[in-house]
Length: 253
Image (cartoon, rainbow, N blue to C red; front, side, top):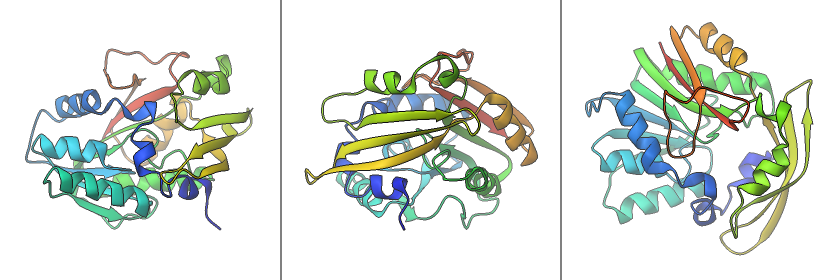
Protein backbone atom coordinates (compact mmCIF):
# COMPACT_ATOMS: atom_id res chain seq x y z
CA UNK A 1 0.00 0.00 0.00
CA UNK A 2 1.30 3.44 -0.92
CA UNK A 3 2.01 5.91 1.85
CA UNK A 4 0.42 9.37 1.74
CA UNK A 5 3.66 11.08 0.73
CA UNK A 6 3.89 8.79 -2.31
CA UNK A 7 0.27 9.42 -3.31
CA UNK A 8 0.56 13.17 -2.73
CA UNK A 9 3.29 13.72 -5.29
CA UNK A 10 1.74 11.71 -8.13
CA UNK A 11 0.96 14.03 -11.05
CA UNK A 12 1.62 17.09 -8.90
CA UNK A 13 4.78 18.62 -10.40
CA UNK A 14 3.25 21.75 -11.95
CA UNK A 15 0.96 22.54 -9.03
CA UNK A 16 3.78 21.83 -6.56
CA UNK A 17 5.93 24.53 -8.14
CA UNK A 18 3.14 27.05 -7.47
CA UNK A 19 2.84 26.25 -3.75
CA UNK A 20 3.70 29.15 -1.43
CA UNK A 21 6.44 27.17 0.32
CA UNK A 22 8.40 26.63 -2.92
CA UNK A 23 8.90 30.32 -3.69
CA UNK A 24 12.11 30.92 -1.72
CA UNK A 25 14.55 29.06 -3.96
CA UNK A 26 16.94 31.89 -4.89
CA UNK A 27 17.45 33.11 -1.33
CA UNK A 28 17.88 29.57 -0.05
CA UNK A 29 20.54 28.90 -2.69
CA UNK A 30 22.31 32.14 -1.71
CA UNK A 31 22.59 30.76 1.81
CA UNK A 32 23.85 27.37 0.61
CA UNK A 33 26.53 29.08 -1.49
CA UNK A 34 27.72 31.13 1.48
CA UNK A 35 27.87 27.99 3.65
CA UNK A 36 30.18 26.22 1.18
CA UNK A 37 32.34 29.28 0.54
CA UNK A 38 31.23 29.49 -3.12
CA UNK A 39 33.46 26.47 -3.85
CA UNK A 40 32.43 25.16 -7.30
CA UNK A 41 34.62 22.05 -6.93
CA UNK A 42 32.41 20.32 -4.39
CA UNK A 43 29.76 17.66 -5.04
CA UNK A 44 26.25 18.27 -3.71
CA UNK A 45 23.51 15.73 -3.00
CA UNK A 46 19.93 17.06 -3.00
CA UNK A 47 17.81 14.60 -0.99
CA UNK A 48 14.09 14.77 -1.74
CA UNK A 49 14.83 17.12 -4.62
CA UNK A 50 11.21 17.19 -5.79
CA UNK A 51 10.88 19.13 -9.04
CA UNK A 52 14.56 20.06 -8.83
CA UNK A 53 14.21 23.70 -7.89
CA UNK A 54 17.36 23.89 -5.73
CA UNK A 55 19.35 21.48 -7.94
CA UNK A 56 18.52 23.51 -11.05
CA UNK A 57 19.32 26.88 -9.50
CA UNK A 58 22.62 25.65 -8.05
CA UNK A 59 23.58 24.04 -11.38
CA UNK A 60 22.92 27.38 -13.10
CA UNK A 61 25.37 28.87 -10.61
CA UNK A 62 28.05 26.36 -11.59
CA UNK A 63 27.75 23.58 -9.01
CA UNK A 64 27.60 19.81 -9.58
CA UNK A 65 24.43 18.29 -8.12
CA UNK A 66 22.87 14.85 -7.87
CA UNK A 67 19.16 15.01 -7.11
CA UNK A 68 17.27 12.05 -5.63
CA UNK A 69 13.57 11.60 -4.95
CA UNK A 70 11.05 8.82 -4.41
CA UNK A 71 8.49 10.35 -6.79
CA UNK A 72 8.77 9.52 -10.50
CA UNK A 73 6.29 12.31 -11.23
CA UNK A 74 8.38 14.95 -9.44
CA UNK A 75 11.56 13.72 -11.12
CA UNK A 76 9.90 13.85 -14.54
CA UNK A 77 9.06 17.51 -13.92
CA UNK A 78 12.62 18.15 -12.69
CA UNK A 79 14.11 16.65 -15.86
CA UNK A 80 11.75 18.69 -18.05
CA UNK A 81 12.74 21.91 -16.29
CA UNK A 82 16.46 21.07 -16.50
CA UNK A 83 16.14 20.23 -20.19
CA UNK A 84 14.29 23.49 -20.88
CA UNK A 85 17.26 25.34 -19.38
CA UNK A 86 19.79 23.17 -21.27
CA UNK A 87 21.20 21.82 -18.02
CA UNK A 88 22.72 18.38 -17.49
CA UNK A 89 21.74 17.22 -14.01
CA UNK A 90 21.74 13.69 -12.63
CA UNK A 91 18.29 12.98 -11.20
CA UNK A 92 17.75 9.50 -9.73
CA UNK A 93 14.71 7.73 -8.29
CA UNK A 94 15.95 6.51 -4.93
CA UNK A 95 14.61 5.99 -1.43
CA UNK A 96 16.27 8.41 1.01
CA UNK A 97 16.19 5.72 3.70
CA UNK A 98 18.55 3.53 1.71
CA UNK A 99 20.91 5.54 -0.47
CA UNK A 100 23.72 3.76 -2.36
CA UNK A 101 26.34 6.44 -1.59
CA UNK A 102 29.33 6.24 0.74
CA UNK A 103 31.77 9.12 1.38
CA UNK A 104 30.95 10.70 -1.98
CA UNK A 105 29.55 14.17 -1.33
CA UNK A 106 30.87 17.34 0.29
CA UNK A 107 27.38 18.67 1.00
CA UNK A 108 23.94 17.13 1.37
CA UNK A 109 20.84 19.33 1.38
CA UNK A 110 17.34 18.26 2.38
CA UNK A 111 15.04 21.27 2.26
CA UNK A 112 11.33 21.89 2.68
CA UNK A 113 10.61 18.50 4.28
CA UNK A 114 12.22 16.57 1.44
CA UNK A 115 11.71 13.15 3.02
CA UNK A 116 12.62 13.76 6.65
CA UNK A 117 10.29 14.09 8.71
CA UNK A 118 7.49 12.57 6.58
CA UNK A 119 8.13 8.91 7.36
CA UNK A 120 5.61 6.88 9.31
CA UNK A 121 8.01 5.89 12.11
CA UNK A 122 10.85 7.60 13.97
CA UNK A 123 13.14 4.75 12.93
CA UNK A 124 12.49 5.47 9.24
CA UNK A 125 13.15 9.17 9.73
CA UNK A 126 16.42 8.29 11.46
CA UNK A 127 17.39 6.08 8.51
CA UNK A 128 17.16 9.13 6.26
CA UNK A 129 19.63 11.04 8.44
CA UNK A 130 21.84 7.93 8.57
CA UNK A 131 21.81 7.64 4.76
CA UNK A 132 22.69 11.32 4.41
CA UNK A 133 25.56 10.95 6.89
CA UNK A 134 26.89 7.90 5.03
CA UNK A 135 26.80 9.78 1.72
CA UNK A 136 29.03 12.56 3.08
CA UNK A 137 32.80 12.69 3.00
CA UNK A 138 34.81 13.36 6.16
CA UNK A 139 34.16 17.00 7.13
CA UNK A 140 31.09 16.96 4.88
CA UNK A 141 28.15 19.21 5.71
CA UNK A 142 24.44 18.50 5.98
CA UNK A 143 21.95 21.37 5.65
CA UNK A 144 18.28 20.59 6.16
CA UNK A 145 15.02 22.01 7.40
CA UNK A 146 12.43 20.24 9.48
CA UNK A 147 9.22 20.96 11.41
CA UNK A 148 9.82 22.75 14.70
CA UNK A 149 8.24 20.84 17.60
CA UNK A 150 8.19 24.00 19.73
CA UNK A 151 5.69 25.66 17.37
CA UNK A 152 2.61 23.43 18.00
CA UNK A 153 3.04 23.81 21.76
CA UNK A 154 2.18 27.50 21.40
CA UNK A 155 0.21 27.75 18.15
CA UNK A 156 -2.42 26.04 16.01
CA UNK A 157 -0.80 24.21 13.10
CA UNK A 158 -4.12 24.33 11.24
CA UNK A 159 -4.38 28.13 11.54
CA UNK A 160 -0.78 28.58 10.40
CA UNK A 161 -1.20 26.39 7.32
CA UNK A 162 -4.44 28.19 6.41
CA UNK A 163 -2.66 31.55 6.62
CA UNK A 164 0.01 30.33 4.16
CA UNK A 165 -2.42 29.10 1.51
CA UNK A 166 -2.62 30.70 -1.93
CA UNK A 167 -5.23 30.18 -4.65
CA UNK A 168 -5.05 26.63 -6.02
CA UNK A 169 -2.68 25.46 -3.28
CA UNK A 170 -3.12 22.41 -1.08
CA UNK A 171 -5.45 22.85 1.89
CA UNK A 172 -5.30 21.15 5.28
CA UNK A 173 -8.14 20.17 7.60
CA UNK A 174 -8.93 18.10 10.71
CA UNK A 175 -5.52 18.63 12.29
CA UNK A 176 -4.74 16.76 15.49
CA UNK A 177 -1.40 17.12 17.28
CA UNK A 178 -0.37 14.24 19.54
CA UNK A 179 1.77 15.36 22.50
CA UNK A 180 3.04 11.83 23.08
CA UNK A 181 4.44 11.34 19.60
CA UNK A 182 4.79 14.95 18.37
CA UNK A 183 2.94 13.99 15.22
CA UNK A 184 0.38 16.12 13.41
CA UNK A 185 -2.30 14.22 11.49
CA UNK A 186 -4.43 16.08 8.97
CA UNK A 187 -6.52 15.64 5.85
CA UNK A 188 -4.72 17.26 2.91
CA UNK A 189 -6.74 18.22 -0.16
CA UNK A 190 -5.11 18.97 -3.50
CA UNK A 191 -6.03 19.34 -7.13
CA UNK A 192 -3.43 17.56 -9.25
CA UNK A 193 -1.99 18.66 -12.59
CA UNK A 194 -4.86 17.05 -14.50
CA UNK A 195 -7.46 18.87 -12.38
CA UNK A 196 -8.41 15.82 -10.34
CA UNK A 197 -9.24 16.56 -6.69
CA UNK A 198 -7.68 14.24 -4.13
CA UNK A 199 -7.78 13.86 -0.36
CA UNK A 200 -5.31 11.98 1.81
CA UNK A 201 -4.63 11.54 5.52
CA UNK A 202 -1.15 12.88 6.21
CA UNK A 203 1.05 12.32 9.23
CA UNK A 204 4.16 14.43 9.92
CA UNK A 205 6.64 14.31 12.79
CA UNK A 206 7.65 17.52 14.55
CA UNK A 207 11.06 17.52 16.27
CA UNK A 208 12.39 19.58 19.15
CA UNK A 209 15.98 20.89 18.86
CA UNK A 210 17.39 18.60 21.55
CA UNK A 211 16.12 15.54 19.65
CA UNK A 212 17.77 16.68 16.42
CA UNK A 213 21.05 17.35 18.22
CA UNK A 214 20.99 13.89 19.83
CA UNK A 215 20.18 12.12 16.56
CA UNK A 216 22.99 13.89 14.71
CA UNK A 217 25.51 13.39 17.51
CA UNK A 218 24.74 9.66 17.41
CA UNK A 219 25.69 9.80 13.71
CA UNK A 220 29.08 11.33 14.61
CA UNK A 221 28.40 14.88 13.42
CA UNK A 222 30.86 17.11 15.28
CA UNK A 223 29.08 20.45 15.07
CA UNK A 224 25.32 20.97 15.01
CA UNK A 225 23.79 24.43 14.69
CA UNK A 226 20.04 25.03 14.76
CA UNK A 227 18.25 28.22 13.72
CA UNK A 228 14.82 29.46 12.75
CA UNK A 229 14.08 28.82 9.06
CA UNK A 230 12.64 31.82 7.22
CA UNK A 231 11.29 31.05 3.74
CA UNK A 232 13.78 32.22 1.12
CA UNK A 233 16.10 33.91 3.62
CA UNK A 234 17.94 31.36 5.74
CA UNK A 235 20.39 32.98 8.13
CA UNK A 236 22.64 32.08 11.03
CA UNK A 237 21.35 35.28 12.65
CA UNK A 238 17.83 33.87 13.15
CA UNK A 239 17.69 32.40 16.64
CA UNK A 240 15.12 29.59 16.83
CA UNK A 241 11.94 30.60 18.66
CA UNK A 242 8.47 29.18 19.27
CA UNK A 243 7.29 31.41 16.38
CA UNK A 244 9.27 29.43 13.78
CA UNK A 245 7.24 26.76 11.99
CA UNK A 246 10.45 25.23 10.65
CA UNK A 247 13.99 25.01 11.89
CA UNK A 248 17.20 25.13 9.88
CA UNK A 249 19.93 22.66 10.82
CA UNK A 250 23.56 22.88 9.74
CA UNK A 251 25.68 19.92 10.79
CA UNK A 252 29.28 19.02 9.97
CA UNK A 253 30.96 15.63 10.24
